Image (cartoon, rainbow, N blue to C red; front, top):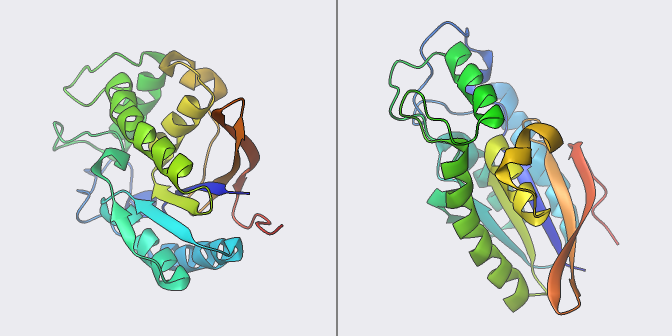
Amino acid sequence: MLVLVLARHAEPMSAVREGHLPLLADAENGLTVSGWGAARALAEALAGLGGECLLYASPIRRASETATCVAERLQVPIRYEASLAERSFDALPQLTGHLSRQLQEDGLLDPERSLMGEESVAQHRVRVAGWFAHLQQQLLARPDQHVIVVCHGGTIEHLLGLILHAPVAALARYYLPCDCAHFHQLSTAMLGGELAFTLDGLNRPHLHLGG
């Protein structure tokens, strides 16, 4: 059975940075030493999939570095997709860690809101939904190939929302947290002529992926 894995990047430097300081730019926000170790552990866990794997990743540094560990362990290329990037706050160059978290939480409660010019949660959903349509075609075209997606917590929540046919306004209610270097594992199958997903496990760094 084909497996879809939605993996969050490992610990970035912003995770251990003081919240009152300006948020690190994406290009500067690489993995911590601990994050690199967790990324390698994630790669080792995903090696248990067996068979052919297709690896997609967000091009943002913390996701790219995590995906590099997975790619090297599985000996597969990385397909970078800009649509998998985290919600954009590029319009706010002086954003602090505290303010970023507040805007993210507020966005879940009011998905259409963009108080300071940041990408709204609803806009993020539209961007991710466009790529999800491509993913579905890939899953249908290659039913013999597992798919691994390395991206961000917010992006994963949108992907799960699309899989569950949950509106963006439901994010605040059904939110399934995915910690750094953890992943959600889903099995896929054809049901009534349509692609169906079963959530096998979540928020655990070492899921059993075999038979």
